[in-house]
Image: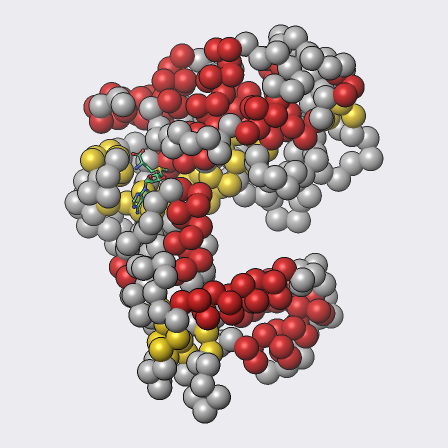
Length: 393
Ligand SMILES: C[S@@+](CC[C@H](N)C(=O)[O-])C[C@H]1O[C@@H](n2cnc3c(N)ncnc32)[C@H](O)[C@@H]1O
């Protein structure tokens, strides 16, 4: 593991590559430090005002996400809506036009892949396997300084990572050194990559990017920063509240409007830690009751909440009548709700509205994250669709 001083130098060099704009502060009001949470983090060195830009980061590497649900799209322009997709005859990456094929991005990608002897004919290479591995493949193109910065970021070395590289080996004889490096990169991406924003209304592949400075921010369920992307994929990180000198800068790795059990499970599965922040420790989640379920007693209209939210198998209790419900009964309800949501067609706004008005609030309190999520989706859709009106209360 590199020292904080070495890492700070690398980060400064990385940020120094940016052209300074009025929006980008030349003098940083934070530094890298040993976080009390373990590992490194960023801490404010001066008082910071709400809205102040903390830094503007750019990705070391980016590419398609590697999840199991694969979106097929052009690996250059990210377009997922084309009748002209074809595979490059040298490397099998999916493309949509000659222009994309002749672009610098594709020529670089292709230069790496076409060096590996193929085990099957190029036409038979599964382009979705290549797409899943593309971000790690692109890391091979970084220069030595960039590779050093990348490998100084946290990695959780777990067998579950690197499946995209193992799948790639079915089609190519990958050089051992490349395979080792790409496998490490998949572990680093898993711990650090951010989902990149898709421009509104554009049908584009979902991308992930490795933003080294942002990657050093630890998580808190009530973060004191927020980030946004510009059209050049730069990430601007701003303070969302006044931050006093000595306070750690936090981002939020999970959905802000998810209840505590959902957030903690997500953080555990994807980032391999159990959050113990103030919000997670508070059964009411600062009064938002996002995880609340309806009391099981027919005479009571109260809300059930976990008694000890930091214990994953905690019993729940009704805030009004005090009824205690064992954890197993709670998981049964949560699973049933999950199945119900799984059957919903989120593209059908009318179905969503009906479900929202007539069904879901019969079973769960209006504060529950599912209701809040549906409300947000409806507001989003109604805001954009001409003629659509809120028909209920
Ligand atoms: C993006 S990295 C953050 C920087 C990292 N601490 C480092 O030293 O490079 C994400 C990892 O940091 C750790 N982490 C982040 N937030 C945490 C928190 N609130 N509690 C415990 N560990 C945390 C987890 O290991 C997580 O997978």
